[in-house]
Image (cartoon, rainbow over all chains, first blue to last red; front, side, top):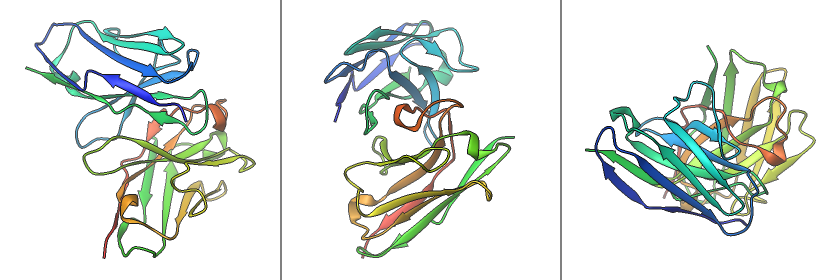
Length: 107
Length: 123
């Protein structure tokens, strides 16, 4: 099973600041890495697929990068509505696994 | 409007069974691989099971293998999860999710989620 480790566990930033979230895989997933956003009380929402492709309707301030074992989700200029938990998921191999999440708080 | 609506959750004693259902509206399920993903209260996400569009390929997480059975009825536009020998650690919000068109069940990600149905396993 591929283990995904997300860091940091949480971060607190002000509107307009840049957020950098990390996801590290225990073995290569090539670029089969996906990001979701979960706002409290809501189901997860697809943000990025295959490392750097934005899902439909996702604002351009969200971007993804990486390959192999190290991946980054960047929010270039935080908005209040970006307060959420962000999860990565690998689709390289069964069973699909998720990281433990990064909680982003907007001050 | 596309909707995935889960039902069937509730409070159940350890060792008992429960069947979850997911009804789709606004889309035809037989175009997509489908999955169940769960989330224990206050915790992260765990993939549970997935099924290809034609039920030819099915997969399970090790934690539920042999106890849970996924199935689908494309005529009824519905997905199911039969859960047996339930354990307290199965307590979670169970989400029905779909994969994008053309994405195989074995390489899935999840582009649309229902709101979930809560399963609580407790005596």
